Length: 149
Image 1 (cartoon, rainbow, N blue to C red):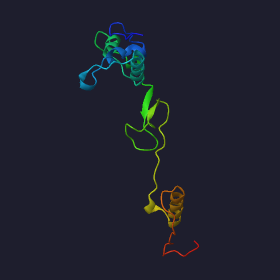
Image 2 (cartoon, rainbow, N blue to C red):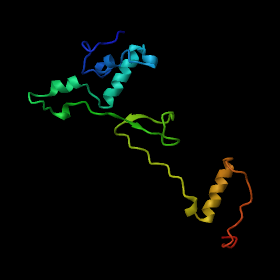
Image 3 (cartoon, rainbow, N blue to C red):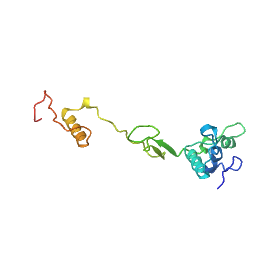
Image 4 (spheres, rainbow, N blue to C red):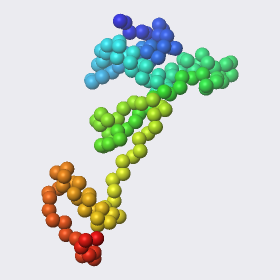
């Protein structure tokens, strides 16, 4: 399997559209990275699916006045979706690329304990005890409340 050049790349083929531009990219110390052609093809297709397009394609679509129909450009078909849980950073493997049509997850909301009733707080503490997050202990009742409520 060889790596396509800019001159031989089929710009209508997502796997070749950017592959030529990704080869021998400068890496650590400015040395060109040797990358297997199948990776370059996958990365090229990924960029295509993100909606990127090379300027030469746009130039070919343009009329003599430099105008073109934007509906003829490739459409973005994937989007990056942050992880539903955990920190939102590069190292959270729960984040991933999904089809544009996939709805974003409903954000997880942590309850504000200051707005909870004493009974709700007791339930939360019991859950944390079962999970081993806090040590079991006697929960003192709220002094402004009669026992048994």
